[in-house]
Image (cartoon, rainbow, N blue to C red; front, top):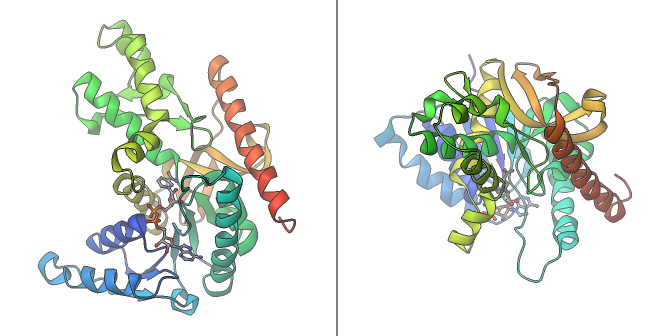
Length: 319
Ligand code: TXD
């Protein structure tokens, strides 16, 4: 059986970590693509030189030509530029939109059968643009944010309850950013919902509210500490979990930015919702019933995503 091929577009902090994880897990052979010459070649050579110690057989290749991603089974996109001081949101949108155009066309030409996971920010708008530019079916293009946001939430909850992270499941919906919606009701320790744990005296509503806020600000907290970049270990691990669910047809139920066609009363847009990922890509969008504040929070988040999409359309009229 031929090895699977994983193409990583963007060889920066997350791209390099993705290459490392994909190789360590022997998910397949890895192509790391970047527009900067030498960067992906240097990283993949370094990683390849770790293979005798680690004992992995994945082959890694650095590339500056889209032809090298030909036939990829999975493509994970982190290409783009981060926001720099003095740059407005629209400046950043304009630059990353152009990047998505180049990347989307490259994927459409060389890897039209791939399952594509977008990570580039602003996530919900970029994954939508990437799908449009690539022309791939909507069930094969999704965005990573919810797995990361949920993982951050779970980490904080495990610390608060002093239990293993393995026993915590949590659920974060909506767009990636300040408007994400952590769902306390669906977050549990070994099946016991957080509201019940509050009643049992394991924590207080006030502390859980603080954890929700810290989860929302999770990306900014790390940017504030690193100063020269954003989070990359947890974002990379989260995208790998999605890729593995596709490659191994695991049918995991994960929160991802997925294309909606009527679900949640929304159409023609990407937003973070629970989905099942298997060999068919996004095989199912799981429609849970949102209540009260959850619904208000989700609507607020959807409006923020729509605002970004409008701004993209104003920049590129082909969208
Ligand atoms: O949850 C999430 N979705 C996220 C998103 C969590 C954390 C970070 N998130 C975003 O991921 C972040 O805001 C960025 O937009 C991406 C990638 O983050 P990373 O930390 O890996 O950024 P880097 O280190 O700046 O890497 C970006 C690389 C860099 O090597 C550039 O040379 C390259 O992208 N780049 C390109 N590659 C290919 N093609 C084009 N056009 C291109 N332009 C830049």
